[in-house]
Amino acid sequence: MGKFVYEGGVKVEIEDRALTHIQLVISAKLRRGEPFPFSWREDASVGGGRTTVWLHPGSSIVYKYYGSRQPAISRAWVDALAFTANAPTGLYLVPEPSDSGEAASPDMRTVPPTG
Image 1: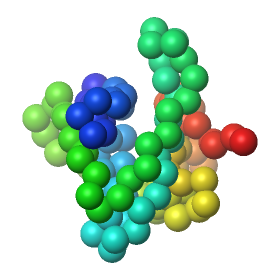
Image 2: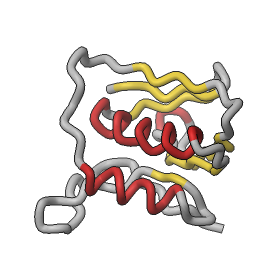
Image 3: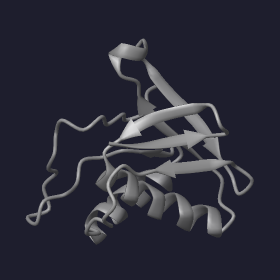
Image 4: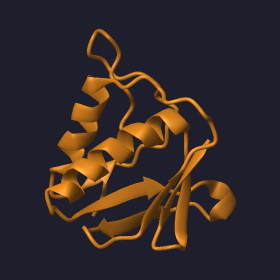
């Protein structure tokens, strides 16, 4: 289980493979100078709810991985995450698409933004 840490304070645990895919999308957008929101659901152990941070090229972001090996990259998953990041609601974790194009891993903390 890795960690995404924003501005030295806000953090969330995300499985290493999912975090790698999120890092690829965030890095691509920030490299192009595109700010955007990133949202996730908080675990009940920290009070539940939802957190959204505003990512911009000057953001201080740390990706902490607990595994030592680079996971396999799924182009379809990167594309699915990039699609959310490019929407007005911003990036949020979506399940990895299966080989058939259907979403897999339904137990991941996804958070379609709500009003």
